[in-house]
Length: 402
Image (cartoon, rainbow, N blue to C red; front, side, top):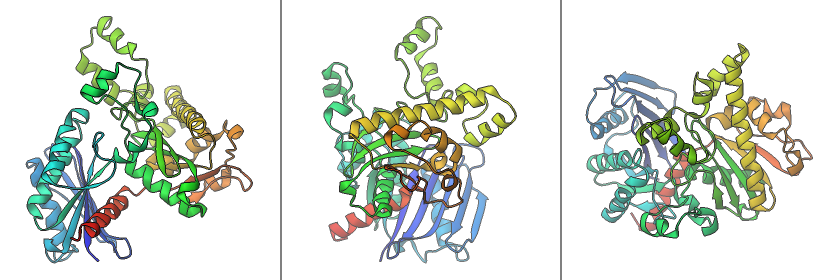
């Protein structure tokens, strides 16, 4: 069975994992952080817990991949004898526009399409392409696959993905809801069906990806029918540093009355708002919990706002689905913050959501947290986007006869 490398190339970090797909074993994983700084850092962990951490030279972006391949080939710590052991590389690509409803083998036409989506994801797609170029140069014999964050949401109906703007904006500029975190929402939906012992095609699910970036998705019979992020990842829930939904007239008010330029407003909405903007302390809920314990009222307000807005969207999507079989929490906050899960669920009893506090606070990572007789099942499922990328990559290389 082939070894598959997954790459998640971002502006400030590159994450990677190597999978042996017979038993879906992660042989090694790591990341290079603080790209663009004077001292980028490489962290690496092998399946047998051998670890390695070092600074890497502040080189050109695509050159940083050389450090990744060097550690994978390292005689003492690596897992590869040569790079030809890698049969395929699955690349996370944030934006695929309307063209890609599923993952795709990377061809020159696919690269062009990813490039054409750069105006829709200027902070992501250029770096995704950089990772593709670097890996194709280093691994010319491997098959390369693009796995799109937006693909899962291409099943949304037009009345869900369209904005109430002149239709010509959609026709000329592709202005519509695309949604993100699709690989995560798809993985936890599939895993939920396995846990519940029901076909995914029989279930109505709401998946809550709650991390520094947050999104909810309404999943009906395995298909995304609505999601909270929009044209960009800024729309929807309150997040670590993103505002989420606001009255759009606020932007014009700030431009006219506050004399703020568009670039400053964009920076504020994406980098200076959300939990950070309200608390004035941090975007990380762990820091906010500590601040609340010390009596900080703004940290408490930020957490209340966060939970309130998640609860709003759950009610909205239960209506969209016409009922609900299970509610799923995943990602950093969703998996590790039981008090936030409890606060989100506390007023949702009318939907059949009844949380069991003891189960909610157990040490298990993957768990059911609903009361025994609750009509709606509550699940905590650690997301595994990398495994989903590896699975898609394997499926495509097997289908192509590679």
